[in-house]
Length: 383
Image 1: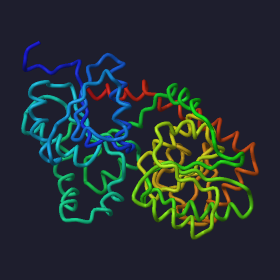
Image 2: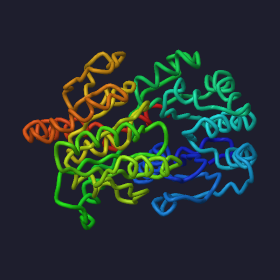
Image 3: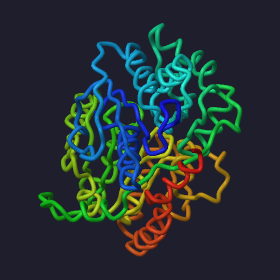
Image 4: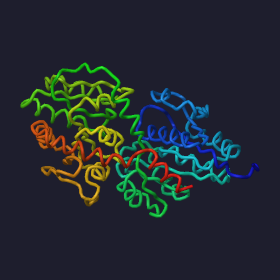
């Protein structure tokens, strides 16, 4: 093969870290999927640390960029592109994406740059506090259109990109998050259940503002007044102490903050319902995974991510206001921070096993669309 030609058997991914974020998990699944499809896969890492490090498929080549600051990643990436010329390279965070676009522009290689967006920027930008971060929206508007393709993980994320960042819609392609469905089913059988024999409510996510576990715990306090149930929350984050204090101050029992776990699927398989109280989402990985295992879902209507999963044929621009409930095709939608109705829907699913069975069957069927083979075909169409 001539040095100037693109290596049509090599693809690459770039991650800032491996600390358990949804986007990081998506990239690792894509990397494994392309490996199993016969591609040579490189994973470029700013930091070779994190809870996901041991989950990387052994056939994937890990390249530690070995730099002290994220911006300095641009130089080894330029060298990598010039030397290896992969068919494409994909990033999944604002910083990683901007670096990849700049690296391609400077290196002048023919490698395609795909930037994945997994969250609505209108919500993300609200959390930017320091001056450096506030520069990011400007750089996104300037540089994202120069990517070969922008991949949004939901229709709502795509629309938000167009509105907030003024990116042309033909630059954006919606591709859902991939899942190894049989692997999830197999892992769900591995473990020992050590919780009391009572109604089990499961929630998963980083212990931060986005997932709004504060509202969930308040709703659970109302539930506990009527039934003997338990709430299990998987995930770690900066709000742990606040949540622990809230639980203690409310004198609540049967709330378990279990931190990060390697196998959340076992918890899903042994729970009665799954609940998401997020204030915003792109397209939630854990909702898809809970659906694969047939767990009935209650989710806040926080953008088209949850609505797109639970009621894909509805008007995705709709968003419930407090006081309203929607019995969607594949689960129940409630308004954000609607404590009373979240509690009400938990109690309704508890009292109506036939409703749980209906939602279990429907969400299993919907979740088949996210099988890794189907998602890989969507990516291949771009190259």
